[in-house]
Amino acid sequence: MDMADALVKLETDGAVARITLNRPEALNAFTEDMHHALAEVLDQVEGDVDLRALVLTGAGRGFCAGQDLNERQRKEGDPPPDLGHTIETFYNPLIRRLARFPIPTIAAVNGVAAGAGCSLALACDMVFAAQSSKFILAFAKIGLVPDSGATWMLPRLIGEAKARGFALTAAPITAPEAERMGMIWKCVDDEALMEEVSAQAVQFSKGPTLGLRRIKEVLRASADNDLDRQLDLERDTQRELGRSDDYAEGTAAFLEKRMPEYKGQ
Ligand code: LHQ
Image (tube, rainbow, N blue to C red):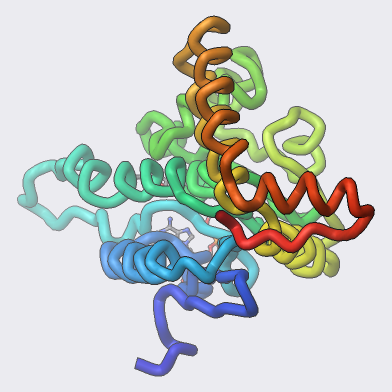
């Protein structure tokens, strides 16, 4: 298949990978085929040690509208669907995978992120959102609970009161509001989105990749740890990183007043 027609596109530029969800006619809503395509490109990125930052975005005017509801349409006489199966097969593995992804991930939210599309953005390490984009926990409108990690992520990001309100009402959250609430890293002018995301991705791609990976891991672990366990984890991780090439390079560069050249190890 021509890459232009692929449901999910993968482009690389130096050590930066860019994945584009590519069903613009349906605001990049997820079909099973698109899930397979996304898993495949994530395999490629994860399997290439030369790639050291990942950008995830959507083609056209949307980021991702969550599950494709046409694919979920029931015909007369069909038994009710097993949504748990869909989630166990496609969405949960995707979110778990992003949570543990070895390199920094950036969501470039170019337009609406609804349902699992909102969850997908929040599963990335940093979210940049175009000024005109919005986030919608659309689930309540169709009788479902927020899924794909949204019920775990949202109260932590924006607090219980806001999480409850947005989950129960499915009211759109504008990009500036999302930034104000601490739900995303940054809201940027529409025209500047890709430039700003690329600059951040390039910076990551030249960074101490192992150290950045451990930062993600220790922050994630803090959700389940008390202070004592977290202090132990910081100690153990620092012990490991203290022996890394990048730490040696980082300190040498500082003392020699030059830019570090990290190998990512
Ligand atoms: C779509 C979709 C869509 C199909 C826009 N499907 N076509 C997990 C596992 C298992 C089951 C269930 O769920 C989940 C998790 C979930 O993600 S549940 C939540 C599913 N998503 C939604 O409920 C969002 C549905 N979409 C919308 O509410 C609107 O489209 C939003 C608010 C996202 C955007 O509104 P507009 O900017 O006004 O665009 P539009 O509605 O006109 O959409 C443009 C086209 O995209 C349109 O097609 P058409 O042929 O009429 O131009 C839509 O039908 C299509 N589209 N979302 N999820």
